[in-house]
Image (cartoon, rainbow, N blue to C red; front, side, top):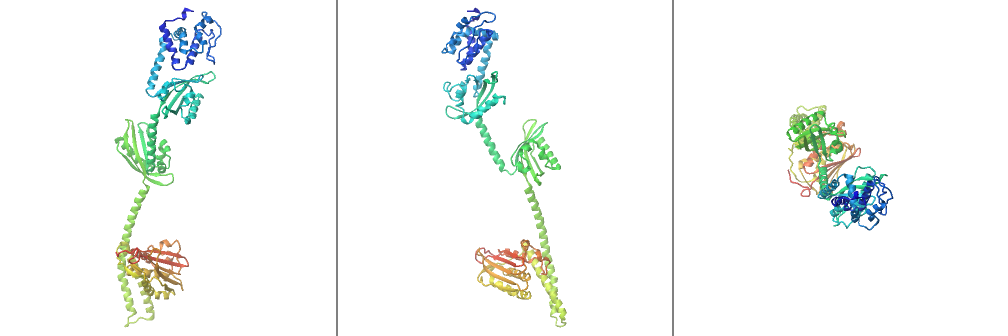
Length: 624
């Protein structure tokens, strides 16, 4: 045997420790491959050593080493164990250690230095294990997973409980995660991704599923590009996933809450020298600004473009003050919404100095349009109410002022009609009657106007008492009899309801009946009829109906006939009137806790109905 192949025992032991690294990782086949490759290189390739064959045995041919001769037979003495398939790998390497030590020394120049990387690797693996992380190596040619003992222990398994092939490890992976895990590796193998990375669930020995984050990289390929060796790490991220899930649940709850808030929640950041950016905006921003929140976060300019220049300047001034003093930022502005309408907005935010160069605002934006419109409506209503009170006061005062001279005119007219000392001629009597009729009509209108002003001002006092409505209707018909004869209109009071009593004011209820009967006669046709009926209503109240066969009222005019000074199509007709009577009628009925309704068809006539509470029955109320 060539003496140059012998080494001291200490160096041989160091070489043994280095080479047995691969055996310690459970991959004896890889250790043998490297040993044979090293020998082949040392002998210049002339010894004929090749890689192990498919049956695990070395293949070699006769040859002569460059520099000195080494017979195959002598080499066979050194490597005779290789022909023994049952020989333990550790014992086999022990027989080869002297020669391999020389090779290591010649290859590295210092066998001790060759041990240094392994020492660092051990320290690194120990450090990673303290963070629930372990390294692994996959020899694809032999389908052998090395360095997975720590990972198995992490999952509660002993080293011998699970095999070291990829198929063995796949049995620990959740079935629903296998396909995605395989796809992630194939994408890396085909060069689509720089590293292989995937998270999956692995079954713990206790039966629970643990989340593992696996990363790896192909470090060796065959000549045809097929992966040969892969190294990587695995991390138990179960606790991290649980924390992330809780955080995600919390964010979702906050998003649900934010959806219920009428305005938009937001977070704005200002980085000195880089400008500001909208870091967060809740979903309500879509309704407020007509823009997806994501678009506003990408470019704040799309929001500024919707705000008038003068409002923007005021907002910026308030914002600069807030950034300098860290006071709350509050502003109001107008917004040209993409739907074409102008909106009134208000914004509020509280600043926080995160770093010397970064300030963050947490705020809220709401649409104040309805509130502004309501405030404007209230102001308009207050102005209208004030104007109405002024009008009512004026009309009330003028009504009193007009009645005094008008009563004088009517009084002198009556005196002239009955003057026996100087009796008027027939022509003068006719003209005096026209003056008296016109004066009485004017006095009636002034009376209605005065009643209306009293009702609107709350000065109308009623005395409610039980009243036989049928009897009062008969009296009102008698009072209108002469006017009906003059207009050639027949009036009829249907029988029934004679015993029904209503709760009302006697004077004002008679006024209501006369107003309705007067209109039924005035707006009737020659030869027409007016029918009055008293009966019980479906809701057990007392119902009075006045039905005529007159001109009727159009559908468009029906909602207005109870409004003051609204006469509809009769405004330019031959029948005189101020359009006050029906508004007074409705107001009086309401004061007596009743209601008025009308149904009409043009050319066929109208039916006015008055519903009043029964005396002592449902709906009856005390006098006010």
